[in-house]
Length: 361
Image (tube, rainbow, N blue to C red; front, side, top):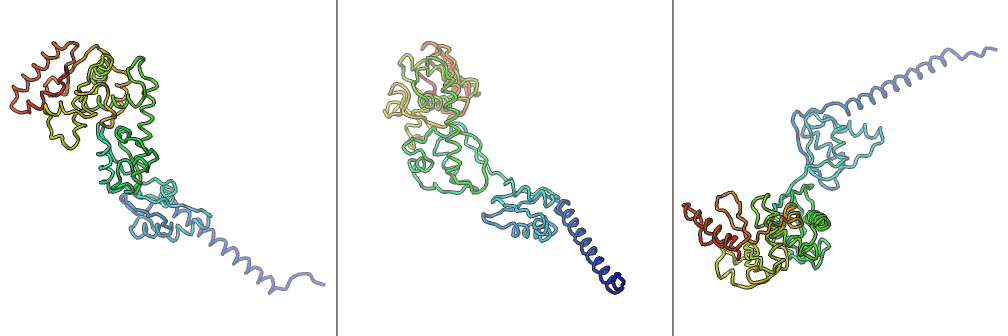
Protein backbone atom coordinates (compact mmCIF):
# COMPACT_ATOMS: atom_id res chain seq x y z
CA UNK A 1 0.00 0.00 0.00
CA UNK A 2 1.49 3.40 -0.98
CA UNK A 3 1.87 6.01 1.76
CA UNK A 4 2.68 8.93 -0.58
CA UNK A 5 0.20 11.80 -0.77
CA UNK A 6 -1.62 12.32 -3.99
CA UNK A 7 0.10 14.66 -6.44
CA UNK A 8 -2.75 17.21 -6.22
CA UNK A 9 -2.52 17.31 -2.45
CA UNK A 10 1.19 17.99 -2.58
CA UNK A 11 0.62 20.88 -4.99
CA UNK A 12 -1.98 22.52 -2.78
CA UNK A 13 0.29 22.26 0.23
CA UNK A 14 3.15 23.81 -1.71
CA UNK A 15 0.92 26.66 -2.86
CA UNK A 16 -0.20 27.27 0.71
CA UNK A 17 3.40 27.35 1.92
CA UNK A 18 4.28 29.81 -0.83
CA UNK A 19 1.36 32.05 0.13
CA UNK A 20 2.39 31.96 3.78
CA UNK A 21 5.95 32.85 2.85
CA UNK A 22 4.78 35.64 0.59
CA UNK A 23 2.48 36.98 3.28
CA UNK A 24 5.26 36.76 5.85
CA UNK A 25 7.65 38.47 3.53
CA UNK A 26 5.17 41.23 2.82
CA UNK A 27 4.53 41.68 6.54
CA UNK A 28 8.25 41.83 7.25
CA UNK A 29 8.75 44.30 4.46
CA UNK A 30 5.85 46.40 5.71
CA UNK A 31 7.19 46.39 9.26
CA UNK A 32 10.66 47.41 8.17
CA UNK A 33 9.18 50.14 6.00
CA UNK A 34 7.22 51.50 8.96
CA UNK A 35 10.33 51.34 11.14
CA UNK A 36 12.43 53.22 8.56
CA UNK A 37 9.68 55.81 8.21
CA UNK A 38 9.55 56.24 12.00
CA UNK A 39 13.29 56.93 12.18
CA UNK A 40 13.63 58.91 8.95
CA UNK A 41 14.11 62.69 8.85
CA UNK A 42 10.88 64.61 8.44
CA UNK A 43 9.92 66.75 5.44
CA UNK A 44 9.81 70.11 7.22
CA UNK A 45 12.88 72.15 6.23
CA UNK A 46 12.37 74.75 9.00
CA UNK A 47 11.56 74.54 12.68
CA UNK A 48 7.84 74.73 13.38
CA UNK A 49 5.57 75.07 16.38
CA UNK A 50 2.41 73.36 17.48
CA UNK A 51 0.17 74.12 20.43
CA UNK A 52 -1.34 71.06 22.06
CA UNK A 53 -4.51 71.67 24.03
CA UNK A 54 -5.19 69.66 27.19
CA UNK A 55 -6.84 66.34 26.39
CA UNK A 56 -5.68 66.24 22.75
CA UNK A 57 -5.29 62.74 21.31
CA UNK A 58 -2.02 61.67 19.70
CA UNK A 59 -3.81 60.89 16.44
CA UNK A 60 -5.29 64.39 16.27
CA UNK A 61 -1.90 65.97 16.94
CA UNK A 62 -0.22 63.80 14.29
CA UNK A 63 -2.89 64.77 11.76
CA UNK A 64 -2.21 68.44 12.45
CA UNK A 65 1.53 67.87 12.04
CA UNK A 66 0.91 66.15 8.70
CA UNK A 67 -1.32 69.02 7.57
CA UNK A 68 1.43 71.55 8.32
CA UNK A 69 4.06 69.44 6.56
CA UNK A 70 6.02 68.32 9.63
CA UNK A 71 5.06 64.61 9.48
CA UNK A 72 4.96 62.63 6.22
CA UNK A 73 2.26 60.10 7.10
CA UNK A 74 0.35 60.37 10.38
CA UNK A 75 -1.50 57.06 9.80
CA UNK A 76 1.75 55.18 9.28
CA UNK A 77 3.12 56.53 12.56
CA UNK A 78 -0.04 55.35 14.33
CA UNK A 79 0.26 51.85 12.78
CA UNK A 80 3.88 51.57 13.86
CA UNK A 81 3.02 52.49 17.45
CA UNK A 82 0.24 49.88 17.48
CA UNK A 83 2.59 47.19 16.19
CA UNK A 84 5.07 48.11 18.93
CA UNK A 85 2.27 48.36 21.52
CA UNK A 86 3.52 51.80 22.49
CA UNK A 87 1.36 54.31 24.30
CA UNK A 88 2.52 57.91 23.94
CA UNK A 89 0.98 60.55 26.20
CA UNK A 90 0.96 64.06 24.78
CA UNK A 91 1.50 66.74 27.41
CA UNK A 92 -0.34 70.00 26.78
CA UNK A 93 1.70 73.05 25.80
CA UNK A 94 3.48 74.72 22.92
CA UNK A 95 6.21 72.66 21.28
CA UNK A 96 8.95 73.67 18.88
CA UNK A 97 9.64 70.92 16.35
CA UNK A 98 13.21 71.05 14.95
CA UNK A 99 13.71 71.07 11.19
CA UNK A 100 13.63 67.58 9.67
CA UNK A 101 12.68 66.01 13.01
CA UNK A 102 11.78 62.34 12.68
CA UNK A 103 8.52 60.97 14.12
CA UNK A 104 10.57 59.31 16.85
CA UNK A 105 12.13 62.66 17.84
CA UNK A 106 8.77 64.42 17.75
CA UNK A 107 7.10 61.83 19.96
CA UNK A 108 10.00 62.02 22.40
CA UNK A 109 9.33 65.76 22.76
CA UNK A 110 5.67 65.03 23.51
CA UNK A 111 6.37 62.21 25.95
CA UNK A 112 8.90 64.27 27.91
CA UNK A 113 6.70 67.35 27.89
CA UNK A 114 9.49 69.52 26.45
CA UNK A 115 7.25 72.50 25.88
CA UNK A 116 8.50 75.97 25.02
CA UNK A 117 8.89 77.85 28.28
CA UNK A 118 7.49 81.32 28.69
CA UNK A 119 9.24 83.72 31.04
CA UNK A 120 8.48 86.55 33.40
CA UNK A 121 11.17 88.72 34.96
CA UNK A 122 10.72 90.36 38.35
CA UNK A 123 13.50 92.89 38.86
CA UNK A 124 15.24 93.37 42.19
CA UNK A 125 13.60 96.17 44.14
CA UNK A 126 10.21 95.71 42.51
CA UNK A 127 7.17 95.70 44.77
CA UNK A 128 4.62 92.96 45.31
CA UNK A 129 2.08 95.10 43.45
CA UNK A 130 4.37 95.32 40.42
CA UNK A 131 4.84 91.54 40.49
CA UNK A 132 1.07 91.03 40.51
CA UNK A 133 0.56 93.50 37.64
CA UNK A 134 3.22 91.70 35.58
CA UNK A 135 1.42 88.41 36.16
CA UNK A 136 -1.96 89.93 35.29
CA UNK A 137 -0.59 91.33 32.02
CA UNK A 138 1.31 88.23 30.88
CA UNK A 139 -0.59 86.59 28.00
CA UNK A 140 0.72 83.08 28.74
CA UNK A 141 -0.32 83.02 32.41
CA UNK A 142 -3.58 81.44 33.54
CA UNK A 143 -5.17 84.22 35.59
CA UNK A 144 -6.76 82.69 38.67
CA UNK A 145 -6.03 85.55 41.08
CA UNK A 146 -6.93 88.58 39.00
CA UNK A 147 -8.94 91.11 40.99
CA UNK A 148 -8.21 89.50 44.35
CA UNK A 149 -6.88 91.48 47.28
CA UNK A 150 -3.38 90.94 48.63
CA UNK A 151 -4.85 89.04 51.59
CA UNK A 152 -6.83 86.79 49.23
CA UNK A 153 -3.74 86.14 47.13
CA UNK A 154 -1.73 85.09 50.18
CA UNK A 155 -4.54 82.81 51.30
CA UNK A 156 -4.77 81.27 47.83
CA UNK A 157 -1.10 80.23 47.90
CA UNK A 158 -1.35 78.84 51.43
CA UNK A 159 0.04 81.72 53.48
CA UNK A 160 -3.04 83.37 54.91
CA UNK A 161 -2.37 86.20 57.32
CA UNK A 162 1.11 87.03 55.98
CA UNK A 163 1.86 90.41 54.46
CA UNK A 164 3.04 89.91 50.87
CA UNK A 165 5.58 92.71 50.51
CA UNK A 166 9.11 91.35 50.41
CA UNK A 167 8.01 87.71 50.50
CA UNK A 168 8.67 86.91 46.83
CA UNK A 169 12.09 86.45 45.30
CA UNK A 170 12.86 88.69 42.29
CA UNK A 171 14.10 86.53 39.44
CA UNK A 172 13.33 85.36 35.92
CA UNK A 173 10.71 82.61 36.10
CA UNK A 174 10.26 80.17 33.23
CA UNK A 175 7.03 78.25 32.92
CA UNK A 176 4.82 76.39 30.48
CA UNK A 177 2.06 78.35 28.80
CA UNK A 178 -1.18 78.48 30.81
CA UNK A 179 0.60 77.95 34.12
CA UNK A 180 -1.53 79.44 36.93
CA UNK A 181 -0.38 82.72 38.46
CA UNK A 182 -0.71 81.10 41.88
CA UNK A 183 1.87 78.46 40.92
CA UNK A 184 4.39 81.11 39.84
CA UNK A 185 3.83 83.06 43.04
CA UNK A 186 4.36 79.90 45.07
CA UNK A 187 7.69 79.33 43.33
CA UNK A 188 8.77 82.90 44.09
CA UNK A 189 7.63 82.62 47.71
CA UNK A 190 9.59 79.42 48.23
CA UNK A 191 12.67 80.89 46.55
CA UNK A 192 12.61 83.86 48.93
CA UNK A 193 12.09 81.59 51.94
CA UNK A 194 15.18 79.57 50.99
CA UNK A 195 17.32 82.66 50.31
CA UNK A 196 16.30 84.34 53.57
CA UNK A 197 16.80 81.22 55.69
CA UNK A 198 20.25 80.62 54.19
CA UNK A 199 21.30 84.22 54.91
CA UNK A 200 19.88 84.10 58.42
CA UNK A 201 21.70 80.87 59.27
CA UNK A 202 25.03 82.26 58.04
CA UNK A 203 24.59 85.84 59.34
CA UNK A 204 27.37 87.71 61.06
CA UNK A 205 27.43 87.55 64.85
CA UNK A 206 25.97 90.33 66.95
CA UNK A 207 23.57 91.88 64.44
CA UNK A 208 20.84 94.04 66.03
CA UNK A 209 18.09 91.88 64.51
CA UNK A 210 16.27 89.17 66.40
CA UNK A 211 14.47 87.31 63.64
CA UNK A 212 14.72 86.65 59.89
CA UNK A 213 11.86 89.04 59.10
CA UNK A 214 13.95 91.96 60.37
CA UNK A 215 16.81 90.90 58.14
CA UNK A 216 14.38 90.90 55.22
CA UNK A 217 13.22 94.43 56.09
CA UNK A 218 16.78 95.72 56.19
CA UNK A 219 17.60 93.94 52.92
CA UNK A 220 14.66 95.66 51.22
CA UNK A 221 15.92 99.08 52.34
CA UNK A 222 19.43 98.27 51.13
CA UNK A 223 17.96 97.18 47.79
CA UNK A 224 16.24 100.53 47.27
CA UNK A 225 19.18 102.62 48.50
CA UNK A 226 22.03 100.93 46.63
CA UNK A 227 22.66 101.66 42.98
CA UNK A 228 26.00 99.85 42.95
CA UNK A 229 26.50 96.22 43.91
CA UNK A 230 29.79 97.14 45.55
CA UNK A 231 28.03 99.49 48.00
CA UNK A 232 25.31 97.17 49.31
CA UNK A 233 27.31 95.90 52.29
CA UNK A 234 28.53 99.43 53.11
CA UNK A 235 24.98 100.79 53.12
CA UNK A 236 23.83 97.86 55.24
CA UNK A 237 26.69 98.66 57.62
CA UNK A 238 25.51 102.27 58.03
CA UNK A 239 22.00 101.15 58.98
CA UNK A 240 23.27 98.43 61.33
CA UNK A 241 25.47 101.00 63.09
CA UNK A 242 22.54 103.38 63.41
CA UNK A 243 20.34 100.64 64.85
CA UNK A 244 23.00 99.86 67.43
CA UNK A 245 23.26 103.50 68.47
CA UNK A 246 19.51 104.07 68.56
CA UNK A 247 19.70 106.58 65.70
CA UNK A 248 16.84 106.92 63.25
CA UNK A 249 17.58 105.33 59.89
CA UNK A 250 16.38 108.38 57.90
CA UNK A 251 15.99 106.38 54.71
CA UNK A 252 14.22 108.17 51.88
CA UNK A 253 12.91 104.96 50.22
CA UNK A 254 10.97 104.12 53.40
CA UNK A 255 9.36 107.56 53.30
CA UNK A 256 8.44 107.08 49.65
CA UNK A 257 6.93 103.69 50.42
CA UNK A 258 4.92 105.16 53.27
CA UNK A 259 3.56 107.89 51.01
CA UNK A 260 2.17 105.34 48.58
CA UNK A 261 0.09 106.98 45.86
CA UNK A 262 0.72 110.40 47.40
CA UNK A 263 4.36 110.36 46.30
CA UNK A 264 4.71 112.86 43.44
CA UNK A 265 8.28 112.09 42.39
CA UNK A 266 10.01 114.34 44.92
CA UNK A 267 10.41 114.21 48.69
CA UNK A 268 9.29 117.43 50.34
CA UNK A 269 9.99 118.69 53.84
CA UNK A 270 6.36 118.01 54.73
CA UNK A 271 6.85 114.38 53.69
CA UNK A 272 9.78 113.94 56.05
CA UNK A 273 7.74 115.43 58.89
CA UNK A 274 4.49 113.55 58.25
CA UNK A 275 4.51 110.62 60.65
CA UNK A 276 3.55 107.13 59.50
CA UNK A 277 4.86 103.65 60.39
CA UNK A 278 7.31 103.71 57.45
CA UNK A 279 8.74 107.19 58.04
CA UNK A 280 12.20 106.45 59.42
CA UNK A 281 12.76 110.19 59.90
CA UNK A 282 10.05 110.33 62.57
CA UNK A 283 10.34 106.80 64.00
CA UNK A 284 13.24 104.82 65.39
CA UNK A 285 14.22 101.31 64.37
CA UNK A 286 13.20 99.33 61.33
CA UNK A 287 9.84 99.94 59.68
CA UNK A 288 7.12 97.33 60.32
CA UNK A 289 7.71 95.47 57.07
CA UNK A 290 9.78 95.26 53.89
CA UNK A 291 9.39 98.03 51.32
CA UNK A 292 10.31 95.98 48.23
CA UNK A 293 11.41 92.57 46.97
CA UNK A 294 15.14 92.41 47.71
CA UNK A 295 17.52 90.36 45.61
CA UNK A 296 20.05 87.85 46.85
CA UNK A 297 22.94 90.33 46.99
CA UNK A 298 21.01 92.71 49.22
CA UNK A 299 19.92 89.89 51.50
CA UNK A 300 23.53 88.75 51.85
CA UNK A 301 24.64 92.34 52.47
CA UNK A 302 22.11 92.70 55.29
CA UNK A 303 23.37 89.47 56.82
CA UNK A 304 27.03 90.43 56.38
CA UNK A 305 27.24 94.23 56.55
CA UNK A 306 30.53 96.05 56.06
CA UNK A 307 30.79 97.74 59.44
CA UNK A 308 33.18 100.50 58.47
CA UNK A 309 32.01 102.81 61.23
CA UNK A 310 30.22 105.10 58.79
CA UNK A 311 26.97 106.61 60.02
CA UNK A 312 26.07 108.68 56.95
CA UNK A 313 26.08 108.46 53.18
CA UNK A 314 25.09 110.80 50.39
CA UNK A 315 25.22 110.57 46.59
CA UNK A 316 28.41 111.89 45.05
CA UNK A 317 26.55 113.53 42.16
CA UNK A 318 28.99 112.07 39.64
CA UNK A 319 26.24 110.21 37.82
CA UNK A 320 27.56 106.72 38.50
CA UNK A 321 25.27 105.91 41.42
CA UNK A 322 28.10 106.06 43.95
CA UNK A 323 27.83 107.46 47.49
CA UNK A 324 30.19 109.17 49.89
CA UNK A 325 30.29 107.48 53.31
CA UNK A 326 31.09 109.49 56.43
CA UNK A 327 31.75 108.70 60.10
CA UNK A 328 31.03 112.18 61.41
CA UNK A 329 28.26 114.66 60.82
CA UNK A 330 30.83 117.33 59.88
CA UNK A 331 32.29 115.15 57.14
CA UNK A 332 28.81 114.26 55.96
CA UNK A 333 27.68 117.88 55.78
CA UNK A 334 30.76 118.71 53.69
CA UNK A 335 29.93 115.81 51.36
CA UNK A 336 26.37 117.10 51.03
CA UNK A 337 27.66 120.55 50.05
CA UNK A 338 29.95 118.97 47.44
CA UNK A 339 26.99 117.01 46.09
CA UNK A 340 24.84 120.14 45.85
CA UNK A 341 27.62 122.10 44.18
CA UNK A 342 27.92 119.43 41.52
CA UNK A 343 24.19 119.57 40.94
CA UNK A 344 24.31 123.35 40.53
CA UNK A 345 27.08 123.00 37.96
CA UNK A 346 24.87 120.84 35.82
CA UNK A 347 22.29 122.28 33.49
CA UNK A 348 19.61 119.80 34.56
CA UNK A 349 18.40 118.00 37.67
CA UNK A 350 15.96 118.75 40.43
CA UNK A 351 18.12 120.27 43.17
CA UNK A 352 15.40 120.64 45.78
CA UNK A 353 14.14 117.10 45.37
CA UNK A 354 17.55 115.50 45.17
CA UNK A 355 19.05 117.40 48.06
CA UNK A 356 17.09 115.38 50.60
CA UNK A 357 18.32 112.06 49.21
CA UNK A 358 20.90 110.52 51.50
CA UNK A 359 20.97 113.57 53.81
CA UNK A 360 20.96 111.85 57.21
CA UNK A 361 21.67 113.51 60.53
